[in-house]
Length: 235
Image 1 (cartoon, rainbow, N blue to C red):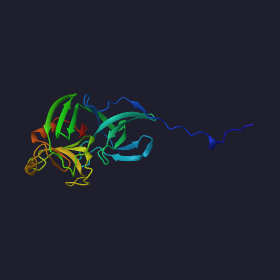
Image 2: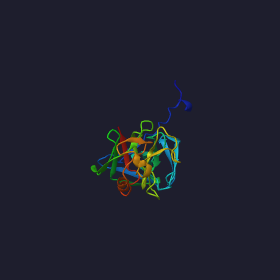
Image 3: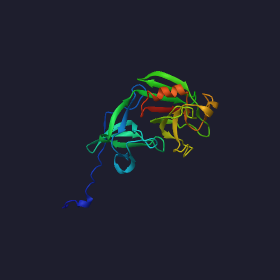
Image 4: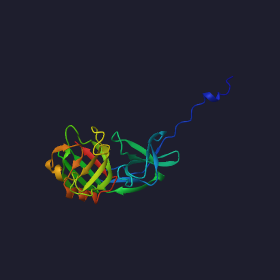
């Protein structure tokens, strides 16, 4: 006769499976969901790995602006709702799961596409093209990183006549070549052009990875496009 199964031989408890809940994925047609951190949070790389991830504060790393990150999807795990956000860190495209109760969700109606082949920035609102302008893109040795990024910070310059013009719209993406630049971690940005930067004509590939546009265009972006707006860089 077979006796009871020893406790150590019992089947392990299955790992809970995350259940998706409705958070619209970012798209050119419908815009995107943006998560503003209202309390510090630990962003898990994987929902099942509680200790693998990174800490996020409520403000950005450079100029301490409210931290608002692009939401990619949502899930319920072990009775708690989570949102998956695009992180402003290396490697580009890194993501993390943040508890839903640590963020305030909002929307951006905008989508920005950067085409490196044509060296053009195009802005969409509710799926309709509203603005398109030429840019200086990364040189061959310091290329503009490809892939999905988002607006991370919007920094108005005290002196609009400096190299970067009146505004710098920093992205979540960072250079794949430069570990540091200009006192920062090599973060890529869309910014204006003044002074010496005017020597590089629009449509050229001569930057350190940033996208330089006319000052009137970067002003237009800075006054309309919120942090967390997707920026898709394509060939």
